[in-house]
Image (tube, rainbow, N blue to C red; front, side, top):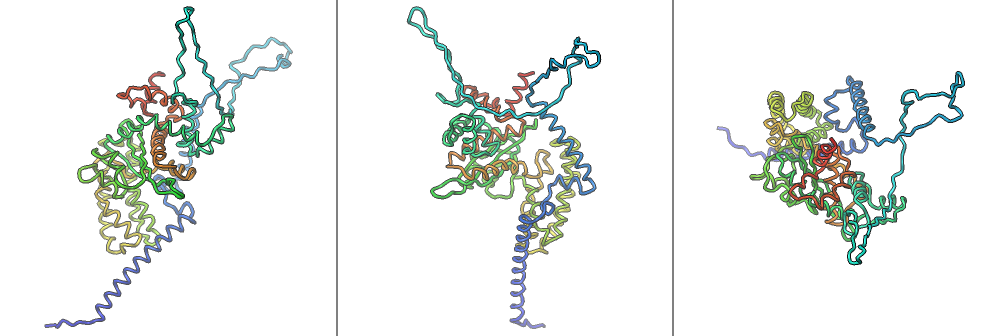
Length: 494
């Protein structure tokens, strides 16, 4: 019988092997971080993560086709905008000294057709005007009765600024990311004495007036079957410094294709905001892997749906240290290719879409799952590829739910896009003054973003609803949401 022989050097060798493996994993992780940082700071655009649409269109062989498609889309947009632009006809008469025939000299000339037409775009400077409202007062001959004309409707009682002015302030900040101190300078140049504090008061007054509408918008989103959600940090002014706050977005798409986009502000990243908006609701929630959303998905809340765009980014970041990550990217691209086929066929969110996914996407997922299981033991958990593999495996159930439900998207890009305007504003006006200011900004962001998502001019919309929301029946408040406002105006016009 062989005897158990204790060799100290064997135990020491195993410990050294484990230590080398650990250090190797840390080195790979550092290499991945360095490569990602260098690519972000110094890399050419081609070295950055390409969009799915770009990869689906192909490389150099389809450059001409992409150029033609882009040109056609740009021309269609320009034509549509030109038709919507206000036009003024300016007629040019033939000078008196030239009103004779160049051939015979006769002055008996008649119009030939409608004339020669050309188009020129000109800039007419916008202007603010001071409106002096004079209410007629009538007195009876008896000397005991007086009748006065009704005063003009105002957003704020005894306010000095009209709904169009307030709408311009809100749109400038929320749609154009213009800081209010710059807007105050522009207004002052136009001849209206203005200070930043006055514009700030007007901004918050508008948010207060529109509060019922903003609350109803979030309620509509929370009642939807599929909701997208995401968050981004926003700095909040504090004593001699700033602190971290968060802007949350919640959005959904109606069966008719309209997008409803809501926002909430909070001073922390705790689960309170998600519970207040989505607590007690059922359906699907499309989010990233942040565990803070567990408050509304577990144990009997919404079904969590994962984001393939986040998975794709992680494997792309692993490419410099692990070229085999390209295989995972190819699998993910195949999933998006199925979605492109559904869009081209016009069957998105239909039974045919679900059948297409089960026929083509399900086999791709099975192959990708096998690939993940095979690669996981071969890479250190702390390395870039190891982390990407772990992320995909942990999120697998949430990532694959789209196959059996045609309403679910592959990624959370919609909610990320909804936060881009907030990110631009963060660069321009840096921070919000206090918690209430953040809440008001979130409310007005919601209405402006929903307007833009549905092709509604936010300035015209706000100028109208700022007056109407105060007298509109609360039971029909939904008629003032941007997409309904647009539909009702179109129906009235026809």
